[in-house]
Length: 352
Image (cartoon, rainbow, N blue to C red; front, side, top):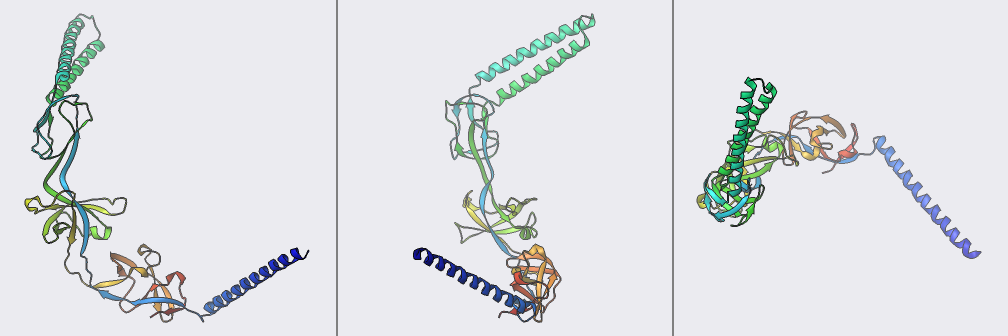
């Protein structure tokens, strides 16, 4: 019996102690809340004096050099490769034959299409003769005419396939990869060659919304290469995406103007340096001043020993500083931290 009573008493004692602690904490919290409500307590905040600052709009962005054209093309017809005229690294021009294809099957296709066209033409002659004597209807004659047109189109397509049997380069460039071998049988969709045009390189990168707003096609840009970091390269903006990507950034392309001896290769990393004229001083505040995010346009200012809610109109974002278009003037004090505990009129205690 004693063995049972002792644990029970211990449990009751623990419960009593926990209850006392909770009640005491609740009492203290009520006392603190009452003090703040009565104006005798203050929320600790950090502040900053509003002033005009010079705006530095310069920024850099990293990207990758890419070829002006990078094409991996596939076969359109079937046949066996009888001869390949180029290898990896070969320079090619547009229209140059890269490989010859056995055209026996395509020749058969042309002959069949020719025979079908001749048969349709003879049928049309017979229908026209019979139509004049009332042997066939107008509908039958129209169908015969349609048959001739279809057969003619089939013949033209077969001839085009025969003409395009050999594989030709669609661009000027260099053979980066050869994906077929002599003697191999190819069919429509078989990958043939990878061609790249490195006569011009472009630096592909992305910028955010505040940066893209200051860019336009044709702007000159200074470029640095991670490999040749002691040299300066130049380029101009040739493309600015009209729509942001999934990361809410805007892809842009900068065409490289000078690349002596083709030092820069496609696939290398580069840095674009965007430089702008000096801007007039304007009011900016720390980004942390906003309640939630910059888009809320809501801040608190310190008026004496209390916080006052203020709505402003935010402009451009420069790193950790935000331009203020309306709602603040020089000399006012903005609260930069501690806003989570504030409402309009809350007593504050600025932390130095």
